[in-house]
Length: 363
Image (cartoon, rainbow, N blue to C red; front, top):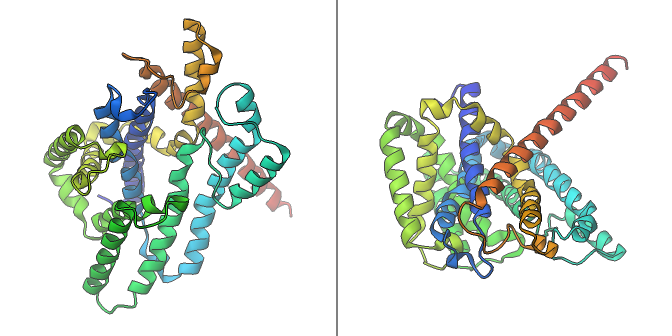
């Protein structure tokens, strides 16, 4: 496992699919007007928060190519193209339609003036533009900074003579970064504090592949799944660290074991062959970027059917103080609509690409 590219990529897409479902479920359950720790869904939100985004960092570490560190400048430029362009494009969409969203009561933020539009246009290119509706885009920015940081760190570690000494130093650096980020000893600008402690998840993916730990997880997938899920669930019940409650290092195993059960679960034949999960995995970037906007469609339907004030559409990310299974339509509609958008975007992209190829033949 892991050396057959087509098989590995299908497997990775399935794992992404599971993770993005957890992200959407987590946000759909955030229905408490004061704080999520007071929600009746607090444990489930906590469960999703511990594993969903860390799993994405793990996946990117698992796919990391060590050749990147041999040519750090070229590799950083390549990664900027891979992550920076999508960030700018999605952010430009939210920037362009900001005043439309305000007029439709989709956000509580004030409308942009001409000055605001110019300022925020510049901020987009500085990776610094955030709003209520594109809040999840912090992840793409964090991933870009994280990967570029690791390329540079590993470049210097390659100067060490032995593989053992290299990984000892790398591990020490990652642990130090984790502690600095976890205990707030690093700035929150650009979410650097989250990037520092999340580097451990990225590094976990690198170690998993480098030392072929996936072979163990494949052979004993049932045991890894059961143990990982059990530990993750227990910690989610006891410690609310996933919801921002400071519990020190006591909740540390929750994310790592959460990643393990998702990894193992993706290996089950029925799950591994799931076309739906594979499609959701491929569409995960679009789902991550747009599901807050799509949530508004569901909120609008609820408001219309229940004759609520239209201004409640501003409530983020879903309508507050709704109970029962109210969140299910949010999850289904977000996944379906964002996946359709992804399919349309890819189709348009392929048409443009084909036309460019045809034009180049006649040049």
